[in-house]
Image (cartoon, rainbow, N blue to C red; front, side, top):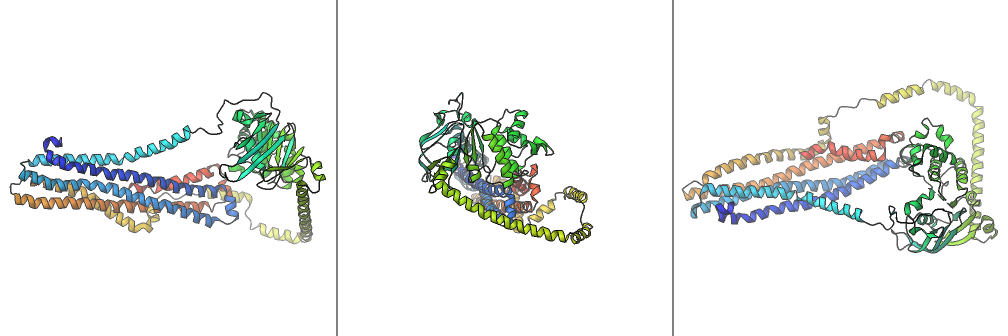
Length: 624
């Protein structure tokens, strides 16, 4: 339309349309990069919170609250840095729309020339100028939204890469074999293996081992010798670089993976229980299991009695990672979970090493029952567990150094196994001596306590009057938990943002001045129209100079004022978010351990609360 009306003005104004595209493209690209960096920084803060909350007992035990808080604050500083850059980019992008004013600066000058020397009509020149300016404005606004398309394309590529990736070990592949009758014979033949994360560190060079069906084999060796790698390869978490693992003479990479793993039951040193009920944790071993099967598995693992003594029985919530249960109880539930699918092969990876002697005895009784009739691989250090195995294999630096029964290996006093047994017996004697010494001290203390029982009872009676009764304590706890919280206040929110008062003043002044741009623009536009209808060329030239400079000044002013406005408000929002998150996290780290045991205060819930709630509160500044 502009070309038909005043083609000279349209041709000269065309480069401005191209120029208006550049800020939108730059803004879209830069904002995408900044957004990715903000996500990366947020993931760092999430990791710190996740690790701290999931290991809150360790944090409290080592009085590491201040250190954890400092790490969290340092990580938040990264999000602040990129948040400020985002505000600056937004200010530049919105301010660059002032290019429309620069276009009018040129149009007012060149249009007056067309009116004076080329016979163009003032109204037509103004109409063409308005067409070009509005077209440039719409084009620039539309292209700034191209960043969303770029983000969608980038995200789509990442999603497509994940979905289309064909895993080397595909658990959903149903094309593999399934054996009708599994005897449970396992054999490792000439295995060469290194973990993908450490390809230069070879774990197995030429590892071979055979475990007869129905037998129990104990793997003995130092840390890093490759014992746990045996279990990882058998469950096909990894494939060997060379060699093969056989089940009943069939290479396991030819078997259907889910079926293969269903034939095995794993009990690890630290059982991974989920934050749900005992019943659901046991059913995790067999999805279609009935409640009767759950009970039978619990009985087989010596867990049924303690479960039924709990107030909610099998519906008892175990808490995150099973924190509501003792180590022995967690381990017995893990054994029940492994046994419920009636596996032909049982894998015990340091299943009792983290337990005290009393819990170990109960768990070991459950394991002894579970081992019967199954091929079992045991990784353990304690002689009491190892010596009852049918076969003992001593592994060192990825090689089987010795193999045989306990009696066979112990006969050779120069064998590695004999050395390990002798070393452990020596340590046990030292521990026994220490225990006897402690027992004697305790006995003496008891004698002293008995002799002073009357005095202590008198003191006890005196102190009882100053002690809150349990029922009173519970009442106080209920009152504390039901305490009325203060109503959210906008004034308190502003008070939290008080350290950024300079940014607030600059941002508000910039916003007021930014609001004045459009009225000034409208006034200048109205005055410009009358200029084109002047007959005196000297007046036209004089007014042209005034309006051209006015529009140019307005363009520069719009750019600067928008940068000031959005940068300062971004600073307010970012620092407020950081301050809220720091206060929330600091307060969370002061809560008692029991608070974290509640379902609504799980690690995931707390991380989500820290991330979302603080951002919602500070979104007021973002909207500004």
